[in-house]
Length: 167
Image (tube, rainbow, N blue to C red; front, side, top):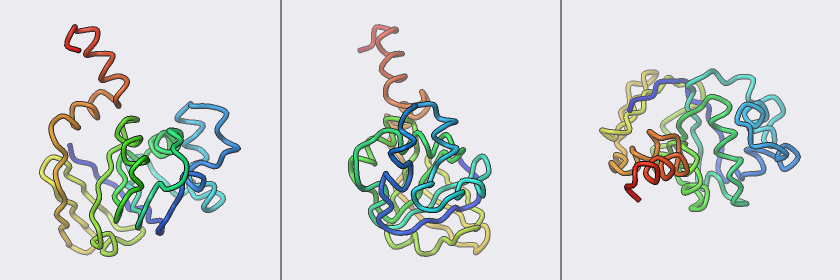
């Protein structure tokens, strides 16, 4: 799995209310949530996003409430991957459960700037910054996580396993 896109950088301690404010939680439709992604950070932020762009966060990305709407909003905005210094633990689990790829890279997040062109190779564990030439190593995702992501998240993965009699 390789993803290519422009980095859309945000700062440290971006909470789930910044990702998708509570006033937009009247739906779980990815397109509607995506249209308001990061509205709690900056009005109209999502208008700069193109399909396939890669969100880049700082420390403790996704802190705050445990709402599943936050990763759905990011996916709905067209960003399949979030790379960050670190993630709040509940957001980290919710992200994968919803089918959002999350890559934790520590201080190397400071080497990526808003607008950099990135390639993220989740199978081999590296991020190439085509703007600067940097290559950042990261732990590759384990095969079972690829299986969950390939199905679009935990619920579709479990449904398929149950239907096949594997669970």
